[in-house]
Amino acid sequence: MKMKKAMALTMAAAMMLSATACSSGKEAAKTTAAPPAASESKSVETTAAKEEEPQETEETKEVVFPDQLNNGEPCTIRFGWWGGQTRHERTEAVVKLFMEKYPNVTIETEPSDYNGYFQKLPTLVGAQDVWDVFQLGNNWAEYSSVVTDLNPYIKDGTINTDNISDNFLATTYDLGKQMEISLGTNAHCIIYNADMVEEAGLAEPAENWTWKDYEEYAEALKAVTGEFGSSSLEEFYGACTVGVPQHEAGLNFFKSDNSGLMIEKPDYMVPFIEMIQRMTKSGAYPDRGALNEMGTAPEQNFVATGEAAMTWALSNQVVAMAKAAEENGVGTLRIAAIPRKTPDGPPGYSVKSSQGLAVYSETKYPEVCAAFINFFINSPEANQILLGERGVPISSAVRAAIRPSLSDLEKDIYAYVSAVGSWKESKDVFINEPTQQNAIRDELKNQMDRVNAGEIDAQEAAENVFDFAENSFKR
Image (cartoon, rainbow, N blue to C red; front, side):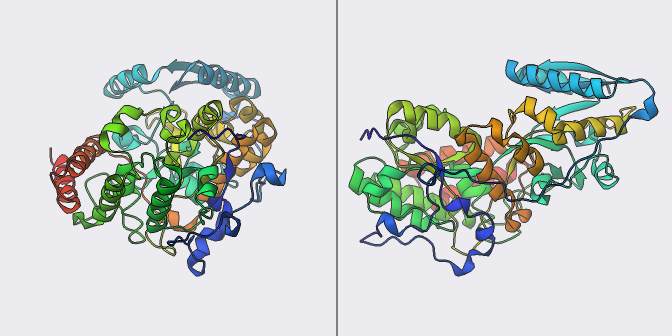
C-alpha cells in the first residue's frame, strides 16, 4: 500500500511529558474486536494541524562562565574525538571560540574516524598518555581506570548542571562515578504510520499503552491494510534491557557494575519472545528471512517503504526514516512511547547518551578540562555552532536557545527526548552497555531464528540466551 499523503512527523501519546509519570489512573488505548475510531484518540493533535510548535516547558537559568582559567597562566590540553567531517568542523570552531575567550589556554585537537579512534585509544591508555579531554560512548566502563570522576567539579560549580535533569546526568553515571558529561542524547520510541492507523479505525496510541495493545494494533493493521502490522522491533531491547526493567522498578538485565546479569532467571524474556512468535505466525510481523532482506538502515525499514505500519527506533533515526517515507509517499509518520508491560508499570527506558566528554585521570589540568566541558555543554554560542550534531543537548537552556535554528521535525524530536528525560521512573534504569552485550544480542537473534523455524519454544530460547549471557561474563 502506497498512500501519497503529506509527510509530517508529529508527537503523539509520548508527548504527554510528565503525564506518564503519574499515569496509573489513565487507561491504555483500548483495542477490541471493534477498535475505537481514530477520533476517540487521547493523543496530542498534530503539529501541522495546530500550526504551532511544541514548547520547551522547563525552567532555565543563566550560566555564567569564569573570567579566567588556571589563574591566567598558560597551559595546554589535548582533546580527542571521533566523527565525520561535519562534526570535526563544528568541534574545531567551538575549540577556537573557547581559546578566544581564554587566550592562555591552548587546546591541541586530534579528531579521528571511529575505527581509528578506538584503535588508538587503547594504545594511549597503555602508554599512560591519553588525551586530557576525550570522547567516549556507552563503553566508558572499559576505560573507568583512566577516567576522572566529574562529581567534584559538578559540586563546586565548575561544571554547571542547573539546567540539566538528573536523568540526563544519569546517562553517563556508572560505577559510582560521573564518567563523562553527555554531548547528545536520544530515546527509544515507536514510529507508526498514522494513515494506516486511521484506516484500521484505531485510536492513536496512548502514552501508557501496553505490549498487549501493540499486538492487537499490529493484528488489526495487518487485517485491514494487508501490510505488516509491525516492522522489526529491537528484540534485544524488548526482551532484555528495556523489557526486564518493565517487570519491576529497580530490576535490570545487567548489573550496574557490568560484572554480570542482575536477573536470576530467564522467565522475564519469555513474554516478549512469545509475542514475536505469535505475530510472526499470524503474518503481522515479518519472518526472519524478510527481516534479513530489509536491511538495518532507517531508510530501509518497512515503515519507511510503506510495507509496515509500526516499528521500534531510536529518536536519532527518525529524521532519516521520515525523509525516506516522504520520498516514498507512504503517508504520515508519528512517534509514540515504547509500550509497557502494564499501563501503570515502569517504562523500562530512559534517555540514552550518544557520546560524551571525559577527563583523563592523569591530566595536569583537571579544572581547565572540566571548564572546557562546561563551556561545550552550556554555552549557547557554542551550541549554535554544534547544532545538536551529536544528539539532543542535555541542557534545557541550550535546547531552548537553538530551537529557532531547528527544523519542525527536529523540534518534535527535541520535545520528545525532553519528555522522556523528565520521567521519574527512569532513574532506576541502567543504560550501561558491557562489552559482552553485542555477543548476547547476536545469540538472542540466533535463538529467535530457531523459534521462528519451530525448533524450540520461547521458554527454551530464553533459557539459552540466559545461559549464554551468564557464561559470557565468565570467559
